[in-house]
Image (tube, rainbow, N blue to C red; front, side, top):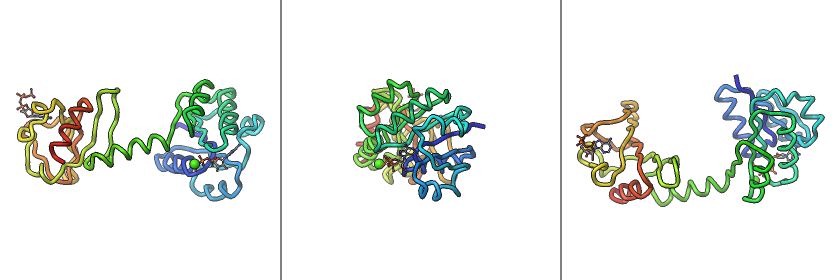
Length: 218
Ligand code: ATP
Ligand code: ATP
Ligand code: CA
């Protein structure tokens, strides 16, 4: 069973910790603010009020035995960097850190973190895509060119088969799954499969192919 330590229980750190606990994992949350720690004591497996830039504190808490450490301090860049270097030196296997700016992220990368996350920047990008494509629910960028997109089936496609909408022939993108709220998920649907409004279709293709398909039903 994986164990996580989260440093900084602001909005990001606390939401991350709560979700990990709900997924069934053990989470130790550390924050220097006593009130914040109190608030999270019923949510996380363990909480400690401490300064996470202090090596002795981290050692005493047995932080080295955790599989993954997340530094979720943002505003105080100095604290973020110091806490990150402590986790790396103590030997936490996987270290993830949140960055507020590109430069902050570059420093964290130089410290050897496994992953830098930019929650505000990434959420901004994601929401921009969703705002310009009203049917887009979510997406994964496979590369600069290729994407897997989750699209809500618009009413104009209600009752149409994949043969009818013919996306592979018309645009080059393929529908790799259809999630039907009532009927479950159909993986690798064939040409006879029918779409209904409220279904979610999972489309794979180049960004351009998917955009053209979306534009054709908008
Ligand atoms: P969010 O956007 O997730 O709310 P933020 O980017 O505004 O967070 P901060 O408010 O700077 O980030 O930090 C998040 C939490 O980290 C705060 O609850 C703060 O008390 C805690 N924190 C800051 N420095 C330390 C430290 N040295 N040791 C432990 N916790 C710290
Ligand atoms: P293809 O080689 O493109 O699969 P096909 O000649 O084998 O075409 P069918 O499998 O019967 O023909 O499909 C007819 C058309 O329906 C395809 O050309 C394609 O445009 C569309 N189609 C079928 N399945 C899908 C799918 N999963 N995603 C997107 N389009 C599909
Ligand atoms: Ca913030």
